[in-house]
Length: 380
Image (cartoon, rainbow, N blue to C red; front, top):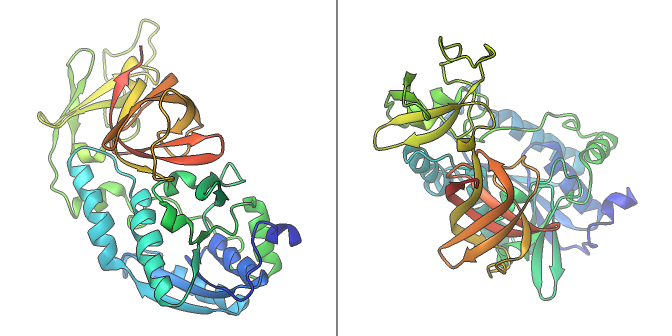
Protein backbone atom coordinates (compact mmCIF):
# COMPACT_ATOMS: atom_id res chain seq x y z
CA UNK A 1 0.00 0.00 0.00
CA UNK A 2 2.93 2.36 0.63
CA UNK A 3 3.79 1.99 -3.05
CA UNK A 4 0.26 3.11 -3.97
CA UNK A 5 0.71 6.26 -1.90
CA UNK A 6 4.21 6.95 -3.23
CA UNK A 7 2.86 9.04 -6.09
CA UNK A 8 0.69 11.22 -3.84
CA UNK A 9 2.04 14.14 -1.80
CA UNK A 10 1.00 14.14 1.90
CA UNK A 11 -2.31 15.89 2.43
CA UNK A 12 -1.98 17.51 5.86
CA UNK A 13 -5.71 18.10 6.03
CA UNK A 14 -6.00 19.85 2.64
CA UNK A 15 -9.48 19.59 1.11
CA UNK A 16 -9.76 17.78 -2.22
CA UNK A 17 -13.02 17.19 -4.09
CA UNK A 18 -12.98 13.92 -6.03
CA UNK A 19 -15.16 13.38 -9.07
CA UNK A 20 -16.94 10.12 -8.20
CA UNK A 21 -18.35 8.24 -11.21
CA UNK A 22 -19.32 5.06 -9.41
CA UNK A 23 -16.39 3.27 -11.02
CA UNK A 24 -13.40 1.64 -9.36
CA UNK A 25 -10.82 4.21 -10.52
CA UNK A 26 -12.46 7.26 -8.93
CA UNK A 27 -13.31 5.27 -5.80
CA UNK A 28 -9.70 4.18 -5.29
CA UNK A 29 -8.57 7.74 -6.02
CA UNK A 30 -10.70 8.96 -3.10
CA UNK A 31 -9.51 6.11 -0.89
CA UNK A 32 -5.83 6.83 -1.53
CA UNK A 33 -6.22 10.55 -0.95
CA UNK A 34 -7.88 9.94 2.40
CA UNK A 35 -5.12 7.55 3.40
CA UNK A 36 -2.58 10.20 2.39
CA UNK A 37 -4.09 12.66 4.87
CA UNK A 38 -6.45 14.74 2.75
CA UNK A 39 -9.95 15.81 3.70
CA UNK A 40 -11.86 14.18 0.86
CA UNK A 41 -15.29 15.16 -0.44
CA UNK A 42 -16.91 13.21 -3.25
CA UNK A 43 -18.87 14.84 -6.05
CA UNK A 44 -21.14 12.78 -8.31
CA UNK A 45 -21.79 14.69 -11.55
CA UNK A 46 -25.08 14.18 -13.32
CA UNK A 47 -24.39 15.32 -16.87
CA UNK A 48 -27.30 13.80 -18.78
CA UNK A 49 -30.93 13.46 -17.76
CA UNK A 50 -32.93 12.89 -20.96
CA UNK A 51 -32.95 9.11 -20.49
CA UNK A 52 -33.34 8.61 -16.76
CA UNK A 53 -36.01 5.96 -17.36
CA UNK A 54 -34.20 4.41 -20.32
CA UNK A 55 -32.77 0.89 -20.00
CA UNK A 56 -29.55 2.14 -21.59
CA UNK A 57 -28.93 4.79 -18.92
CA UNK A 58 -26.58 3.70 -16.12
CA UNK A 59 -26.71 6.91 -14.06
CA UNK A 60 -28.92 5.47 -11.32
CA UNK A 61 -26.70 2.42 -10.77
CA UNK A 62 -23.54 4.54 -10.96
CA UNK A 63 -24.88 6.79 -8.21
CA UNK A 64 -25.68 3.75 -6.05
CA UNK A 65 -22.12 2.50 -6.55
CA UNK A 66 -20.66 5.92 -5.71
CA UNK A 67 -22.74 6.15 -2.51
CA UNK A 68 -21.62 2.64 -1.51
CA UNK A 69 -17.95 3.50 -2.08
CA UNK A 70 -18.23 6.76 -0.15
CA UNK A 71 -19.78 4.88 2.76
CA UNK A 72 -16.93 2.35 2.88
CA UNK A 73 -14.27 5.06 2.58
CA UNK A 74 -16.00 7.24 5.18
CA UNK A 75 -16.45 10.44 3.20
CA UNK A 76 -19.14 12.90 2.24
CA UNK A 77 -20.74 12.64 -1.20
CA UNK A 78 -22.58 15.44 -2.95
CA UNK A 79 -24.62 15.12 -6.13
CA UNK A 80 -24.56 18.04 -8.56
CA UNK A 81 -26.45 18.41 -11.84
CA UNK A 82 -24.42 19.78 -14.74
CA UNK A 83 -26.93 18.67 -17.41
CA UNK A 84 -27.66 22.22 -18.62
CA UNK A 85 -23.96 23.05 -18.94
CA UNK A 86 -23.34 19.73 -20.69
CA UNK A 87 -26.05 20.30 -23.29
CA UNK A 88 -24.85 23.83 -23.96
CA UNK A 89 -21.09 23.24 -24.00
CA UNK A 90 -20.73 19.64 -25.19
CA UNK A 91 -23.84 18.13 -26.72
CA UNK A 92 -24.68 21.10 -28.96
CA UNK A 93 -21.18 20.94 -30.42
CA UNK A 94 -21.50 17.17 -30.84
CA UNK A 95 -24.64 17.59 -32.98
CA UNK A 96 -23.16 20.44 -35.05
CA UNK A 97 -20.10 18.36 -35.88
CA UNK A 98 -22.11 15.32 -36.99
CA UNK A 99 -24.40 17.49 -39.07
CA UNK A 100 -21.32 18.94 -40.80
CA UNK A 101 -20.09 15.44 -41.71
CA UNK A 102 -17.34 15.22 -39.12
CA UNK A 103 -16.82 12.67 -36.33
CA UNK A 104 -16.36 14.48 -33.00
CA UNK A 105 -14.95 13.19 -29.74
CA UNK A 106 -17.28 14.55 -27.03
CA UNK A 107 -15.25 13.02 -24.20
CA UNK A 108 -12.41 15.45 -24.96
CA UNK A 109 -14.77 18.42 -24.79
CA UNK A 110 -16.50 17.04 -21.69
CA UNK A 111 -13.21 16.95 -19.83
CA UNK A 112 -12.29 20.50 -20.80
CA UNK A 113 -15.70 22.09 -20.28
CA UNK A 114 -17.38 20.05 -17.55
CA UNK A 115 -15.01 17.92 -15.49
CA UNK A 116 -12.23 20.49 -15.29
CA UNK A 117 -14.21 23.73 -15.59
CA UNK A 118 -17.74 23.47 -14.16
CA UNK A 119 -16.63 20.80 -11.68
CA UNK A 120 -13.51 22.74 -10.67
CA UNK A 121 -15.50 25.95 -10.15
CA UNK A 122 -18.01 24.09 -7.97
CA UNK A 123 -15.24 22.43 -5.95
CA UNK A 124 -13.64 25.80 -5.20
CA UNK A 125 -17.01 27.06 -3.97
CA UNK A 126 -17.02 24.09 -1.58
CA UNK A 127 -13.73 25.29 -0.13
CA UNK A 128 -11.43 22.84 -1.91
CA UNK A 129 -7.96 23.79 -3.01
CA UNK A 130 -7.74 20.99 -5.58
CA UNK A 131 -9.80 18.40 -7.42
CA UNK A 132 -9.03 14.80 -8.31
CA UNK A 133 -10.35 12.28 -10.81
CA UNK A 134 -9.73 8.63 -11.61
CA UNK A 135 -8.06 9.29 -14.95
CA UNK A 136 -4.92 7.37 -15.86
CA UNK A 137 -2.64 10.36 -16.34
CA UNK A 138 -0.10 12.28 -14.27
CA UNK A 139 0.78 15.90 -13.49
CA UNK A 140 4.33 17.11 -12.96
CA UNK A 141 5.60 20.55 -12.07
CA UNK A 142 8.67 21.29 -14.16
CA UNK A 143 10.64 24.47 -14.75
CA UNK A 144 7.90 26.74 -13.44
CA UNK A 145 4.98 25.16 -15.27
CA UNK A 146 2.79 22.06 -15.10
CA UNK A 147 3.13 19.14 -17.48
CA UNK A 148 0.53 16.53 -18.37
CA UNK A 149 2.10 13.07 -18.50
CA UNK A 150 0.87 9.73 -19.74
CA UNK A 151 -0.45 7.28 -17.18
CA UNK A 152 2.02 4.63 -16.05
CA UNK A 153 -0.27 1.89 -17.36
CA UNK A 154 0.13 2.31 -21.12
CA UNK A 155 -2.94 0.20 -21.84
CA UNK A 156 -5.12 2.59 -19.81
CA UNK A 157 -3.42 5.95 -20.43
CA UNK A 158 -6.08 8.67 -20.84
CA UNK A 159 -3.93 11.72 -21.52
CA UNK A 160 -5.38 11.80 -25.05
CA UNK A 161 -8.76 12.83 -23.58
CA UNK A 162 -7.15 15.42 -21.30
CA UNK A 163 -4.98 17.26 -23.82
CA UNK A 164 -7.09 20.46 -23.72
CA UNK A 165 -6.37 21.11 -20.04
CA UNK A 166 -4.52 24.35 -19.34
CA UNK A 167 -2.05 25.49 -16.71
CA UNK A 168 -4.69 26.84 -14.32
CA UNK A 169 -6.60 23.55 -14.43
CA UNK A 170 -3.54 21.31 -14.08
CA UNK A 171 -2.22 23.33 -11.15
CA UNK A 172 -5.32 22.33 -9.17
CA UNK A 173 -5.71 18.75 -10.43
CA UNK A 174 -4.59 15.40 -9.02
CA UNK A 175 -4.70 11.97 -10.67
CA UNK A 176 -4.18 9.61 -7.70
CA UNK A 177 -4.17 6.37 -9.76
CA UNK A 178 -2.09 7.71 -12.64
CA UNK A 179 1.08 6.04 -11.36
CA UNK A 180 -0.63 2.66 -10.90
CA UNK A 181 -1.61 -0.22 -13.13
CA UNK A 182 -5.26 -1.14 -13.45
CA UNK A 183 -4.73 -4.55 -11.89
CA UNK A 184 -3.29 -2.86 -8.78
CA UNK A 185 -6.21 -0.45 -8.60
CA UNK A 186 -8.65 -3.35 -8.60
CA UNK A 187 -6.60 -5.16 -5.95
CA UNK A 188 -6.59 -2.09 -3.70
CA UNK A 189 -10.36 -1.77 -4.13
CA UNK A 190 -10.94 -5.44 -3.30
CA UNK A 191 -8.69 -5.30 -0.24
CA UNK A 192 -10.62 -2.25 1.01
CA UNK A 193 -13.97 -3.97 0.56
CA UNK A 194 -15.24 -1.70 -2.23
CA UNK A 195 -18.21 -3.33 -3.97
CA UNK A 196 -17.18 -1.97 -7.37
CA UNK A 197 -13.72 -3.57 -7.33
CA UNK A 198 -14.59 -5.77 -10.31
CA UNK A 199 -17.03 -3.37 -12.00
CA UNK A 200 -16.71 -3.28 -15.78
CA UNK A 201 -15.14 -0.12 -17.21
CA UNK A 202 -17.57 2.21 -18.95
CA UNK A 203 -17.16 2.46 -22.72
CA UNK A 204 -18.55 4.59 -25.49
CA UNK A 205 -19.98 8.09 -25.42
CA UNK A 206 -21.41 8.88 -22.01
CA UNK A 207 -24.85 10.06 -23.17
CA UNK A 208 -25.29 7.37 -25.81
CA UNK A 209 -24.50 4.45 -23.50
CA UNK A 210 -24.93 1.00 -24.98
CA UNK A 211 -27.90 1.90 -27.21
CA UNK A 212 -27.65 1.66 -31.04
CA UNK A 213 -25.90 4.81 -32.24
CA UNK A 214 -28.19 5.37 -35.24
CA UNK A 215 -31.26 5.18 -33.06
CA UNK A 216 -29.81 7.85 -30.80
CA UNK A 217 -28.81 10.29 -33.56
CA UNK A 218 -32.21 10.00 -35.24
CA UNK A 219 -33.77 11.66 -32.22
CA UNK A 220 -31.89 14.88 -32.89
CA UNK A 221 -30.85 15.05 -36.55
CA UNK A 222 -32.92 14.59 -39.74
CA UNK A 223 -32.30 11.45 -41.79
CA UNK A 224 -30.93 12.30 -45.27
CA UNK A 225 -30.44 9.16 -47.41
CA UNK A 226 -28.08 9.23 -50.36
CA UNK A 227 -25.88 7.18 -52.66
CA UNK A 228 -22.91 4.98 -51.81
CA UNK A 229 -20.36 5.07 -54.63
CA UNK A 230 -17.08 3.32 -55.41
CA UNK A 231 -14.42 6.03 -55.20
CA UNK A 232 -12.37 4.46 -57.98
CA UNK A 233 -15.13 3.88 -60.54
CA UNK A 234 -18.01 6.17 -59.42
CA UNK A 235 -20.23 3.09 -59.65
CA UNK A 236 -23.32 3.30 -57.43
CA UNK A 237 -23.14 0.41 -54.97
CA UNK A 238 -26.09 1.13 -52.72
CA UNK A 239 -27.64 3.77 -50.49
CA UNK A 240 -26.84 5.14 -47.06
CA UNK A 241 -29.32 6.37 -44.48
CA UNK A 242 -27.29 9.48 -43.69
CA UNK A 243 -23.65 10.56 -43.85
CA UNK A 244 -23.75 11.28 -40.13
CA UNK A 245 -23.88 7.53 -39.45
CA UNK A 246 -20.54 6.88 -41.16
CA UNK A 247 -16.94 7.65 -40.31
CA UNK A 248 -13.71 7.32 -42.26
CA UNK A 249 -12.38 3.77 -42.13
CA UNK A 250 -15.74 2.26 -41.20
CA UNK A 251 -16.21 -1.31 -42.38
CA UNK A 252 -19.33 -2.62 -40.69
CA UNK A 253 -22.80 -1.29 -41.35
CA UNK A 254 -22.30 -0.24 -44.97
CA UNK A 255 -24.79 -2.78 -46.30
CA UNK A 256 -22.91 -3.46 -49.54
CA UNK A 257 -21.15 -6.74 -48.78
CA UNK A 258 -21.10 -9.53 -51.35
CA UNK A 259 -21.77 -7.39 -54.43
CA UNK A 260 -21.73 -9.38 -57.64
CA UNK A 261 -18.97 -8.76 -60.15
CA UNK A 262 -16.69 -7.12 -57.59
CA UNK A 263 -14.26 -9.96 -56.88
CA UNK A 264 -10.59 -9.64 -57.78
CA UNK A 265 -8.71 -11.88 -60.23
CA UNK A 266 -8.40 -14.60 -57.60
CA UNK A 267 -12.12 -14.51 -56.91
CA UNK A 268 -11.65 -12.92 -53.49
CA UNK A 269 -14.02 -10.25 -52.17
CA UNK A 270 -12.12 -7.58 -50.25
CA UNK A 271 -14.03 -5.65 -47.62
CA UNK A 272 -15.41 -2.18 -48.33
CA UNK A 273 -14.39 0.81 -46.20
CA UNK A 274 -15.78 4.34 -45.93
CA UNK A 275 -13.20 6.66 -47.44
CA UNK A 276 -14.77 10.07 -48.17
CA UNK A 277 -17.93 12.08 -47.64
CA UNK A 278 -19.23 14.54 -50.23
CA UNK A 279 -21.52 16.73 -48.15
CA UNK A 280 -22.70 18.83 -51.11
CA UNK A 281 -23.85 15.80 -53.11
CA UNK A 282 -24.70 13.69 -50.04
CA UNK A 283 -22.56 10.83 -51.38
CA UNK A 284 -20.58 8.33 -49.32
CA UNK A 285 -17.52 7.10 -51.20
CA UNK A 286 -16.10 3.69 -50.34
CA UNK A 287 -13.01 1.72 -51.37
CA UNK A 288 -12.04 -1.93 -51.36
CA UNK A 289 -9.28 -3.13 -49.08
CA UNK A 290 -7.91 -1.99 -45.74
CA UNK A 291 -4.74 -0.57 -47.30
CA UNK A 292 -6.33 1.35 -50.16
CA UNK A 293 -4.34 4.58 -50.81
CA UNK A 294 -7.43 6.71 -50.13
CA UNK A 295 -7.36 5.53 -46.52
CA UNK A 296 -3.72 6.50 -45.97
CA UNK A 297 -2.57 10.02 -45.10
CA UNK A 298 0.92 11.41 -44.94
CA UNK A 299 -0.02 14.65 -43.19
CA UNK A 300 -2.92 16.50 -41.64
CA UNK A 301 -4.12 19.96 -40.73
CA UNK A 302 -5.66 20.75 -37.35
CA UNK A 303 -7.40 23.80 -35.92
CA UNK A 304 -9.01 24.80 -32.60
CA UNK A 305 -5.61 24.23 -31.04
CA UNK A 306 -4.92 23.84 -27.33
CA UNK A 307 -1.40 23.55 -25.93
CA UNK A 308 -0.91 22.47 -22.30
CA UNK A 309 1.95 24.91 -21.68
CA UNK A 310 0.10 27.79 -23.30
CA UNK A 311 2.75 27.92 -26.03
CA UNK A 312 2.88 25.99 -29.33
CA UNK A 313 5.60 23.36 -29.78
CA UNK A 314 8.68 24.02 -31.88
CA UNK A 315 8.40 23.26 -35.57
CA UNK A 316 10.61 20.74 -37.41
CA UNK A 317 11.19 18.73 -34.25
CA UNK A 318 10.63 15.02 -33.76
CA UNK A 319 7.40 14.32 -31.87
CA UNK A 320 4.80 11.58 -31.75
CA UNK A 321 1.07 11.93 -32.29
CA UNK A 322 -2.19 10.03 -32.03
CA UNK A 323 -5.13 10.64 -34.34
CA UNK A 324 -7.38 8.34 -32.29
CA UNK A 325 -7.31 7.10 -28.70
CA UNK A 326 -6.16 3.51 -29.13
CA UNK A 327 -3.58 4.29 -31.82
CA UNK A 328 0.11 3.68 -31.05
CA UNK A 329 2.30 6.78 -30.99
CA UNK A 330 3.22 7.73 -34.56
CA UNK A 331 6.51 9.62 -35.18
CA UNK A 332 5.86 13.02 -36.76
CA UNK A 333 6.99 16.61 -37.05
CA UNK A 334 5.07 19.87 -36.90
CA UNK A 335 5.87 21.67 -40.13
CA UNK A 336 3.92 24.83 -39.36
CA UNK A 337 1.95 26.19 -36.43
CA UNK A 338 0.30 29.48 -35.54
CA UNK A 339 -2.64 30.52 -33.37
CA UNK A 340 -5.22 29.15 -35.80
CA UNK A 341 -3.83 25.94 -37.29
CA UNK A 342 -0.97 23.49 -37.42
CA UNK A 343 0.35 21.11 -40.06
CA UNK A 344 1.63 17.72 -38.91
CA UNK A 345 3.67 15.42 -41.17
CA UNK A 346 4.04 11.74 -40.29
CA UNK A 347 7.08 9.55 -40.82
CA UNK A 348 4.80 6.73 -41.99
CA UNK A 349 1.32 6.93 -43.59
CA UNK A 350 -1.53 6.99 -41.08
CA UNK A 351 -4.72 5.00 -41.58
CA UNK A 352 -8.20 6.59 -41.64
CA UNK A 353 -7.33 10.06 -40.38
CA UNK A 354 -10.78 11.45 -39.59
CA UNK A 355 -11.94 15.10 -39.60
CA UNK A 356 -13.50 16.03 -36.28
CA UNK A 357 -11.30 13.73 -34.24
CA UNK A 358 -8.46 15.05 -32.08
CA UNK A 359 -4.80 14.83 -32.98
CA UNK A 360 -2.71 14.83 -29.80
CA UNK A 361 1.03 15.51 -29.81
CA UNK A 362 3.56 13.97 -27.41
CA UNK A 363 7.22 14.43 -26.59
CA UNK A 364 8.12 11.13 -24.97
CA UNK A 365 5.68 10.79 -22.01
CA UNK A 366 4.72 14.47 -22.00
CA UNK A 367 1.40 15.39 -23.62
CA UNK A 368 1.89 18.74 -25.36
CA UNK A 369 -1.71 19.27 -26.49
CA UNK A 370 -3.30 19.17 -29.92
CA UNK A 371 -6.30 20.19 -31.97
CA UNK A 372 -9.24 19.11 -34.08
CA UNK A 373 -8.42 17.47 -37.42
CA UNK A 374 -9.85 19.49 -40.30
CA UNK A 375 -8.24 17.69 -43.24
CA UNK A 376 -5.60 15.22 -44.35
CA UNK A 377 -3.38 14.81 -47.40
CA UNK A 378 -2.74 11.49 -49.19
CA UNK A 379 0.47 9.65 -48.45
CA UNK A 380 3.18 10.32 -51.00
